[in-house]
Image (tube, rainbow, N blue to C red; front, side, top):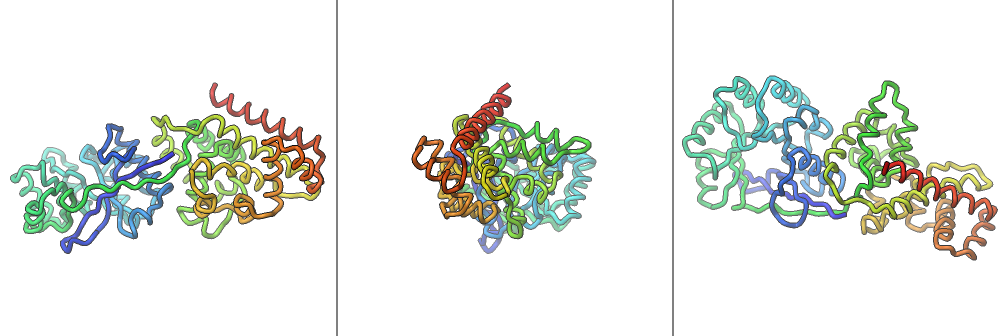
Length: 411
């Protein structure tokens, strides 16, 4: 599934790129679709941080990302490093005691705050308090009257806050903003938003809320949670990408989903599941039942075949080998490219790119059963010292296991 974001640069007075505003897009048409603001932000976050990668988007510059009132109340910005982005508070957010308190906390943690399309409400006592917390105020140069704009400019200047002129469409407008003391500039005069796309693993079934209920239990059981995530190839992939994105993957390689959950922590996992749930709530693009079924059958069968091997081994690594064996087809990317983005154990990675090891041997055997290549199956069973009769039992059990899981999801 192809996913999109748009990136529009913000410039300083030297006409150098200061940062980028990251905007929601759902196709290659360069305009904002009619969509709920909360879902748009969640989609931007997932695509920016997990699918595309914030470094690829920003090249070390801060990214401006819009936040609705509800997402601020959920403290969604705290999921990310302050250096990566600027919290852009939408004009629809009504200043209140709660919003001011949240912004004070965000400022204390090192985050920068920008007020978007800002208009000062003299009748709201919290509007001034919120303004005091702002690092940047974005003023609409196209739709704000000169009188209103002058009042804002004087107020912002008196508080030593950076003024950003947005919706600049001509050289004349830019020069005027520059003469009025604006420090940052954004608009079509400089650059229209540039669309960036990548591939994402589509969701087959929205299981996020169900998993969050288990996480929120008084005594959450990691084994139950990891089992639920393992049964969804999309969630498994996103969890491993998340581990890599926030840095754990640099130090630890994982062989199973339980290990990934422990590295991340249940609190952080719950936050990300919420973002994913919001983002996917209206999505119609999912993994087909056929692909999900095949991934589950391969995963379960690799795990069961590993138990038949004469030497004891860690079956959890075999499960991920089978589960991720279709990832190159799902994403339409080379497997080597995908494996650079997830912190899988080297043995699993080697098996997935075709290097000979015991996990690759097991996967090849499972693929031979899948294709009904019985001569290959017979020869492989002899090499691995597995009884063919027992192997066929594992196939039947795997098919039934996957069928039962998928039926439970559709009830």
